[in-house]
Amino acid sequence: MLVAAFIFIAPGADPAVHRKTVETPGVQLTAVGVETYEQGVAVAVEMAEKGCGAIELCGGFGIRGTYMVQEAVKGKARVGAVRFDLHPGLDNKSGDELF
Image (cartoon, rainbow, N blue to C red; front, side, top):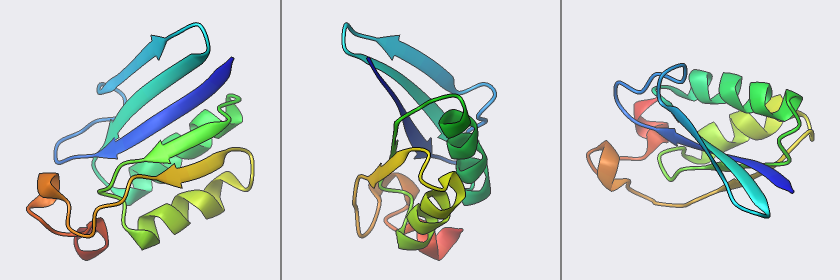
């Protein structure tokens, strides 16, 4: 079974509260909301250390945020990203501009 995480960034998101896991026969996916890149990094490291093999970041993580997560997990998980140049959930700005 693939153990995966989707980390999304949103104003007011609290990773301790805004977290849900869904299981299918082939995938266990945990979605976690964070408010900052730093929280995203911490959640990614936590998930990778628990055996998560794939981490996907929402489009709110810009190039810098994606790099920060990639560096932090140190190869323990594959990191991918949904891409928006300007994210509609962040007032049409890049996370790199905000965080």
